[in-house]
Image 1: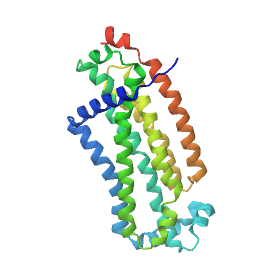
Image 2 (image 1 turned 30 degrees about the vertical axis):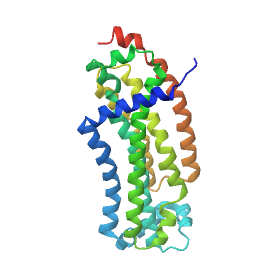
Image 3 (image 1 turned 180 degrees about the vertical axis):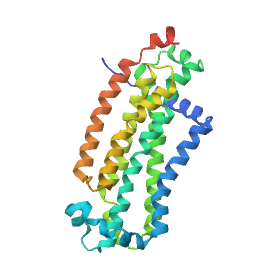
Image 4 (image 1 turned 90 degrees about the horizontal axis):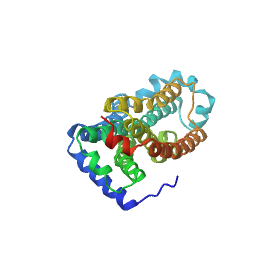
Amino acid sequence: MKLAIHPNYIAALVRKEWAELYQNTMLLGTVFFMPLLFAAIPLIMLWSMGAYMGDAIGDSMGSFGTAVQGMCTGLSSGDCTLAIFLAQFNLMFMFIPIILPSTILPYAVVGEKTQRSLEPLLATPISSVDLLLAKAFSAIIPASMATWFSFGLYLSIAWFLAPNKAIFYVLFQWHWLFAVVIVGPLLAMFTANLTLMVSSRTTEPRVAQQVAGLVVLPLILLLIGQMSGMLLLTPLLIFLLGVSVAILDIIFTYLAVQIFDRETILTRWT
């Protein structure tokens, strides 16, 4: 099946989705509040504990293994532990592009159906692929921008709060930037496709939201494994994660178009 894409149609539909999003104060508040919360948590810990944090948890350095200790050349044990401890929060910023689309998109199909606004749209000549990509991008773009903004805010403020600037050579390495800037939107695309697939087959928005929320579970396991010292997110592992998610995005985009049945939604979906 050839997937013909029309950027002008997609852009027009994205603007329509955003106009509806701005009218929903709860969703709009989530888009703004959640990124700020994720940036505030590590900053509050850094500000409240400061230089004492490294010494307070310095004895736990051995749990991270020799690989991590090798990244801290030139740093004291306390400063190295502080950098590694704060780096664990970098993974939290990859939760944002997963959570936000799963919050916004469950109403993309189901909500429009209940409001009787989906039928006129489906009656137009617009293709299913254009429609689904527009709905996906309407959530992916704000989720990605919110992620980048919150991560940039975290970097900027943490720079002034850190007791030793050399910590940043460990804290903000290139693979974390790759994870947030590149892998983050890929995860948002994966979540968006999964949410749209479920929304196309259910009449209850909460079902789609709950199923899409399961995507966050693997990241939670990665976060637990990294904080416990059982797993180290190396540049190679993050790169492989990005490649894997990109492949899944292509597959799930195709499947979402195949699952989306316009005739069923128009005539028999109640």
